[in-house]
Length: 113
Image (tube, rainbow, N blue to C red):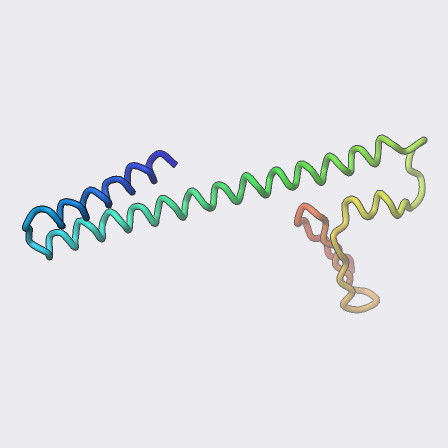
C-alpha cells in the first residue's frame, strides 16, 4: 500500500511539473507511462494479496463453524449427520450413477467413481 501511495504521488508530481514547466512531451509521456504501469502492476499484486487474505479468513470461518458443530455433538459421530455434512460440503455434482463429484466449502473437489 505504501508503494502505491508513493507511485501515486510521483504520478501527480509528474503531471504537475508538466503543467508548470515546459518540457519535451515525448519524455514526459514516457515517464508518465512508466509510473502508471508500475502503479497498476503494484495495485494488481496488492489486490491479489488482499483477495487471498479474504479467502483464507473465509476458509477459517467455515472450518471454525465445522469444529463448533462437531464439538456440539453429544457423542462420537458414527452415522451420517446432515448438519455436519452441510457445514463442510458446498455442493455435489452427479454426472452418472458411477460418476459423482463432491465440492467442499474450502474448494477441495473429490471425484467418486
